Image (cartoon, rainbow, N blue to C red; front, side, top):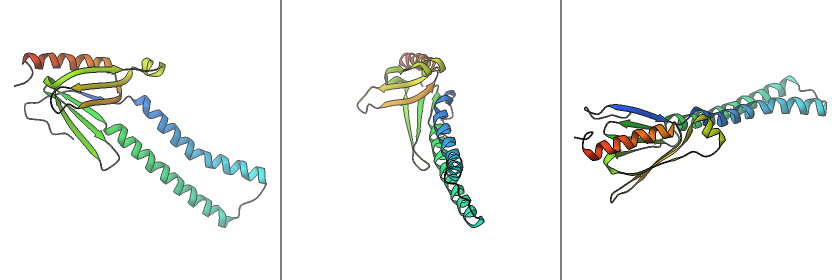
Length: 174
């Protein structure tokens, strides 16, 4: 968890939309089920009978296969769940998780925002209201903040624009 300043209040937590995680879930389920159907199909097609010795070997290999699928799925879930923006009343914390042991945290003050862009492409993102939010910063060390597949990107953009204008007026920051 990110440690905020004492006088800093969390306004919004922006995460990726749940719908984008359906594809890795479906792929994992398909990879878990296909070997069972493939083995049954080959067994009936080739008309051979497996002895108890080979049954345990095949079950062990299948268990190992399921373990690999579970680990890959858990890595995908970790990347999905831990990619987040924390919007406080002073700044944005961009947390980018890459695998288990690589986390990058960037901070952007509202008065450094140059441009906010929302990109929603396709029918499904439009229907489920998710898309990419891109925040460009100003200054010598300009950086770009991007959150892909964010929930309600236009609402987030409007809130960030409002906080930016308040920061420019000096009503948000110290």
